[in-house]
Image (cartoon, rainbow, N blue to C red; front, side, top):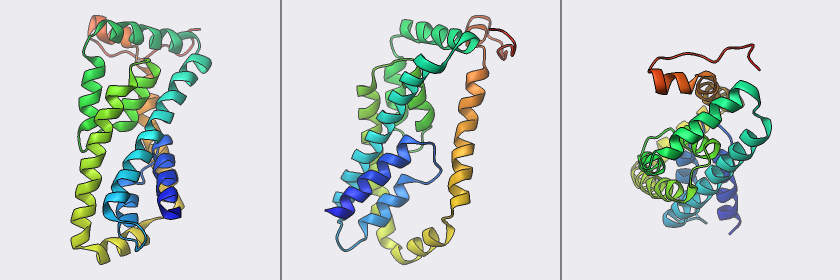
Length: 196
C-alpha cells in the first residue's frame, strides 16, 4: 500500500509543477516492483497525474485572478471573453489532452486561466494517460533490465531544474502576446512593456 501511495504522490507532484520528468517513466518503474502490479501502477499513476493537472489548473486559475494586473490582465480577460464565445474550445482541449503526446502543461494552464470547464478536459487527459501508461508498462515489460538501468543513470537534479525552466518558456512567451491584435487583426504583436 505504501508504494502505491508514494506513486500517487510522485505522479501528482510531477503533474502539479512544470517538469521534464516523464510520469510515464515513474509509473513504469513502479509497475515492475514486487509489491506493485502493472494494472495498479497504471490506475494509481493516472489518478495521481489527473489530480496534479487539476491542482495546476486551479492554481493558474486563482493565480491569474490574484496576481495579473494591467496589460496582462486585460489580455487574459480578452482571451477569456473570446474563448467564451467559442462553443468548442473546451471540447478541443479535451481531445487534445487525450492525445498520447500533448502539451498538457499548456492545456491545463489555458483551461485554468480562461476558467474553462475542467471535467471534459480531465476525462480526456485521464483516458489518454491510461493508454500511454498501459502501453509503456507493456512495452517496458519486454526490456525491463535495460530501461531501469538507463533511467537510473540519466536522472539528476540538473535535469529536473532544466526541465522546469524549459517548460516555463512557452508560458512566458504566450503571456506576452497581444491576443486581441492576433485574433482581430491576424498579426502577431507583443504587449507593450510600459503600459499599465
